[in-house]
Every structure is written in C-alpha cells, then in structure tokens.
Figure 1 (cartoon, rainbow, N blue to C red):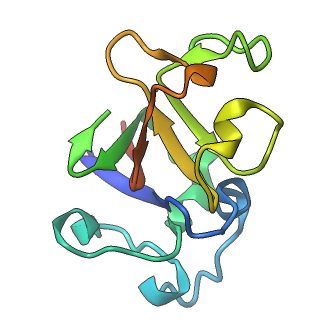
Figure 2: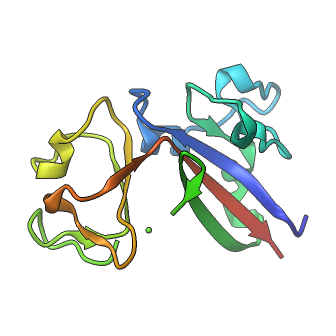
Figure 3: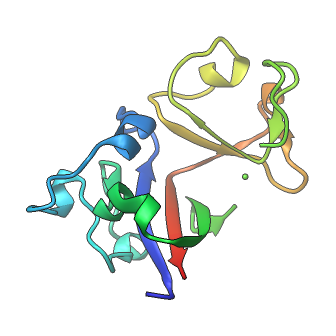
Length: 146
C-alpha cells in the first residue's frame, strides 16, 4: 500500500456540499460508484469517466488508523494539475486554491454557480477578489501510506 490512493473526487457545480460529503460515513457493506462510493484502486475517472456526484472512499472513515504519510490534492481543468496563503477578509484573501460552497458575501462567490466550485490561481497565486482565477472541473484527493 505504498503507492498513491485516490480517496475523494470532488465534482464542480453539482450542487452537493463538498464538506458534507467528505464527512459522511459509508455503509461499508455496499460500495457502489453510482452511489458515490469510491472503491480502493479506482482512479479511472481521469481517463474519460466523468462522475456527476462527489466520490468518497470508505478509507476516509479510518483516517486516524491509516498512518497517512502524505496527502496530495490535484485539480483538473482540461487535464492540467494545479493550492491559500492569506485570508483576512474578502479584500485580503490571496492564495492558490479555494473550494467555494456558498455565498460568503465576497466577490468570488458571485462569479460562478452552482456550487461547489474549485478555484485556483497560477504562478504565485491570486488575490481572489480580482477574479483572475480559473475553475477546475474536478478535484482529486490522494493519500500515500507508510
């Protein structure tokens, strides 16, 4: 189990809460892709499969016991991979990656709906209120175990 394992796939604009889905426990007796369950070893969504729901692995339920060595977050927008440095309110928010799920009153929350949206800035990052960011279609969360 030393290689990278895909444990979550977030889907932009599907109307599902990213946070709620991450925290939701699975029925471990039945892990089916069409129900949003990501079985161990599945990573084929990068090769043409485009889920409509967030996909969550039951491994997340055992996070503390897994002995996770590293976590990798990848954003996919036309197969490009692309993370926040500062948050001091709407005008000071600056970084590389953001998940928006609801309207906080900041300018970027009005940019595109439905939620969630995966926003990212290239290079040295972006001041979010400038709206000079791009949107990713999918987000993958991978883990590597000891």
